[in-house]
Each structure stands twice: as structure tokens, then as C-alpha cells.
Length: 90
Image (cartoon, rainbow, N blue to C red; front, side):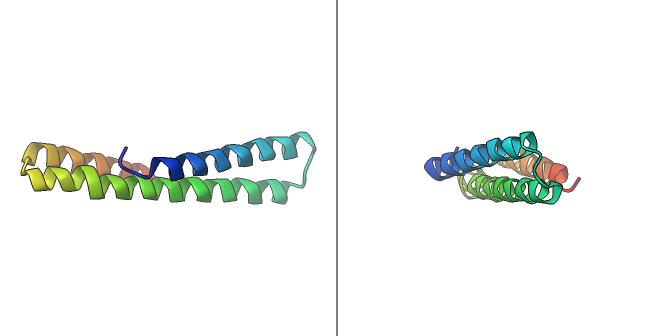
């Protein structure tokens, strides 16, 4: 993975902590809106991490394939990104 692995791991640890916190909130019967707000915060963190990972893919893997002149690999890398974008739009 070409993204900053340390930063990605930190963000995942934060998300994990948020999920554990949400689970505790549910166990404790927390107010639904408070639970929902925490869920949305976790989703936002993961979306931002996904953007960073995809950006690194474009800047690294896709760019490398273009520089190498490897048309087949470049088409494959672009198709992978298109597939991710399609899933994100649903």
C-alpha cells in the first residue's frame, strides 16, 4: 500500500475506539441521536481514510503504470478505480 501506513493505522485505531465506544453507548442505553452522531463521526473518519488510500493509489500505482508505458496495467488500474467509484456512488 502506497498510502502513509502509520497514519492509516492511527486512523483505524481511532475508528476502532469509536466503534467500541458506540457499542458501550448502546449497552448503556444512550440517547439514539448521540449514538447516531458517533456512528456518523466514525463513518466520516473511514471515508477520509478511504480517500487517502485511493489518492495514494492514483499517485503511486496508476501513475507508475502510466510512466512505465504499460497500457494493459494502466487500463487495469483505471478499471479498479472506476469499480471503487461505482461502489461509492451506491
